[in-house]
Length: 184
Image 1 (cartoon, rainbow, N blue to C red):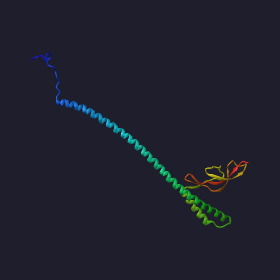
Image 2 (cartoon, one colour):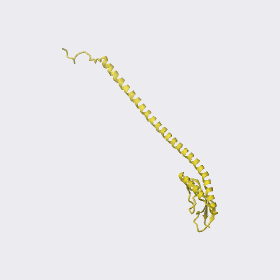
Image 3 (cartoon, rainbow, N blue to C red):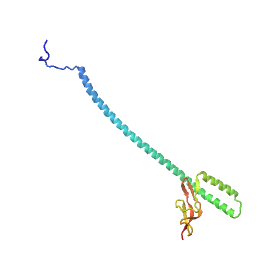
Image 4 (cartoon, rainbow, N blue to C red):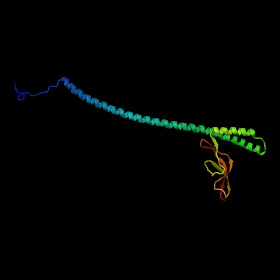
């Protein structure tokens, strides 16, 4: 036997075709996995982008829905307010008729029932009168059409209610016409 270390032979590693294919497959697999990871990363970013877009679209929809609801409510309320203003003019006529009949000592029982029904209708639709007499003038609730000088009253005290004002759902549908005081 000959000594392998002293031999003149050159050691050669012989790689079989199977081993070579396996090594090549491993390299290809690593590249393939990297490509898949890159694609996965891109798809994850797309998902994040789409989620953001969906959130924006949802927020836009909710804003549009709120605005539409608000516009509908405003439209309905403005129509109800316009109707109530016309109704209040008729109501005022009934009140004046009752006062005129009462001054002439004419029975107002029928008018009292009609006014009671009208008051119920106003209450049903949350239309309430603005209390003004003796109050301090508030330009959001009152409209001053005359001024009297009275040194005994506070400045801008309402001394006379000329026409009743009304509020509906926290909105003034008709301001109270008033007379106010000024210090003299």
